[in-house]
Length: 114
Length: 111
Image 1 (cartoon, each protein chain N blue to C red):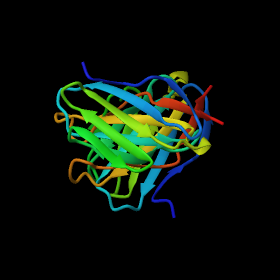
Image 2 (cartoon, chains in turn purple, cyan; image 1 turned 180 degrees about the vertical axis):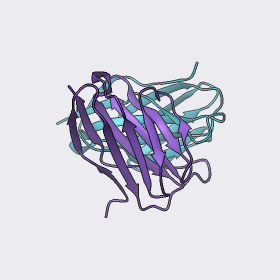
Image 3 (cartoon, each protein chain N blue to C red; image 1 turned 120 degrees about the vertical axis):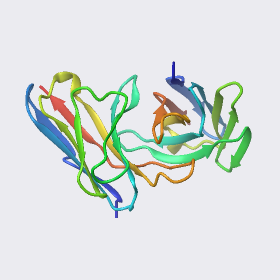
Image 4 (cartoon, each protein chain N blue to C red; image 1 turned 180 degrees about the horizontal axis):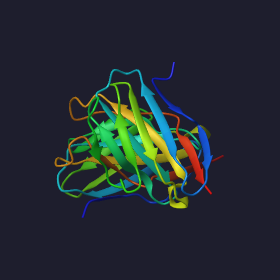
């Protein structure tokens, strides 16, 4: 059973559209992250959270909002999607304890903004 | 500035070895991790190092030199299935629980 799941797996929208990407983890982890992955850039952190109701800004937050409703659920919101947000989005979780803090990734969501 | 650099591509031959390099520049250092990512799939954790020297984990070994801001992942007895991207991720002391990922090295193992 996958411990980090994402939905939808694929999404097509138009410029200006409203998109919500969902992530759920059953690892009982405190930390959750949203990344985007683009050719030549690797994984870039958008937002992250260390618990329900908490939100921290990542390295590329512009155009994105996020909300952590429970320990398990973390959402990424694109309220006015633009073609530059076409990307592969990964959610991850970690326990946040100790230095190693391994991240466990979901399967990813491919978003195409036309 | 803060950055993690990796070569984009690496080619090697089945049965031999491959060394995937990573250089980093961060405001602090709190450990370096390696992840494997197959095409179209999510990254998967391989190894974590925080002390200088070589950490031998069998098929995957890792080396770290903090003074040089350098690490490598060494894959021995390569198999075709080792063809994948390998991501280096550095955690700095000032970034809380953020890590900075390199762009990844795509390793191609040929017969």
